[in-house]
Length: 127
Image (cartoon, rainbow, N blue to C red; front, side, top):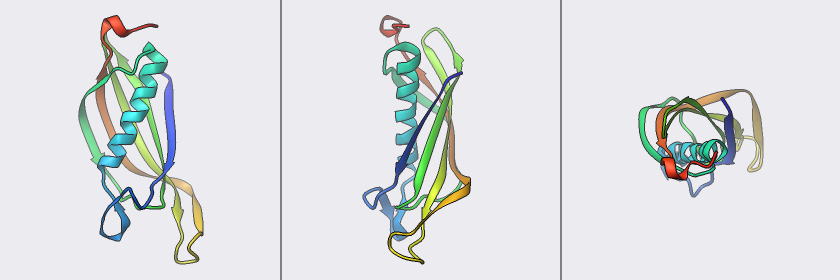
């Protein structure tokens, strides 16, 4: 199956808790964007996210981290599309060195995994 990927930097506006910690809901927002791209590629329509059946928060995300969110359609029904998602931290800030220092991680850190179902109504499917 085809995959979709986005990479974004978490900003200070994304930080929701003390210590510049980013709310886990931000990862779900990224997964929603990935799901939308997958549905457009597969069906020519944005569709609707129906439900998550599993969400696992694995590691913290902070303002300044670069997050790569990946998704894949794993099962295709009449109108439903089951998907899996993974968010990985790929770059971290190094403010201990300087305000603008950052490191590209040799091994990305998985911060969140999820799976869910999206729906594209039959009359909206164009492919």
